[in-house]
Amino acid sequence: KNAKILISDGCSGSTITQDFIRRILSAHGFNILKSSYESFNLNLRKNPFLETALKQIKGKPRRSDSQILAYKLLYNHSISKGQTLVNKISPIAFSTHWKVLEKMGVDYVYMSRRNALDICVCSVRDCILGGPEIGYPVFGNNGTKTDLCFKRRKSGEKIQALFKEGGAKKCMQKIQNKSKRWTKNFLSEALRRNIDTSSLFYHDLFAFEYTPDEKIFQDSFLAWKSFIAPLVEQVNGTIILDILRPAQNTLPPLASHRDVIYNFEQVEKELMEDESLQEFIRY
Image 1 (tube, rainbow, N blue to C red):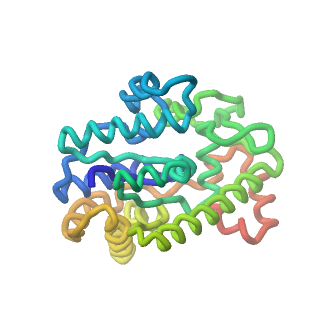
Image 2: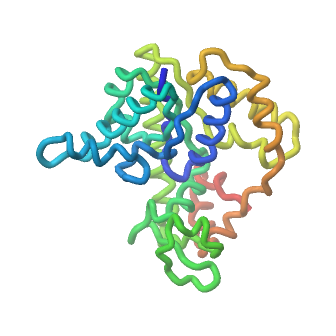
């Protein structure tokens, strides 16, 4: 099959996950097409075939029609070059186009982040989520609102999330409900249609990067073997070990939420009042 898809939302660790997927597939003999990690997006920089797709659609094109046609053109391009297309797609986009994608013969896996507070903090800082009910990104030194959004990752500035009263709780509940609902539907539909796929959390895959603990490394290794299996006909465990081992214990512990939330004390107090959300606070 000439296309492999990672289904994942923003701020779920999808970029590094796709990076490892590409490396593992390459080591298994796949010739990976050099393309954007988000080539399903309606963005000329991420899919050069979008302009062609827009010209082929008569009248005013719907977003979903442009999206899938541009992807088909990129997919056909990968086939003509004898290469494999690897990219990320959001759960919403996948839900819209899964029938077409399955007819094309794509393989896919699903990955999400377990800690809902991490997703909300990242989403507010990147301007993916926010607004008057949730919050907005601010400079950590003075609390001034910023519009750096995704560019903050390379800016060198300390950008924090400032949550409105009740904003963090509202965001987390929204994330949790969406994740539970989509994961359940995704896996039940895959089972019903006898589709070989997998669904894992980011932390299960990458816990090994934050510790020298060998048991945690082995747990991550087994998680990766399970996760990558739907994309590879026969998984070579040695290849996965060789790719994971150099990254073991290379990252510092995850930052305390006190360091990334401007009004941490307020958020902490609100979340401590809800037993189902307390566990997500990291000190």
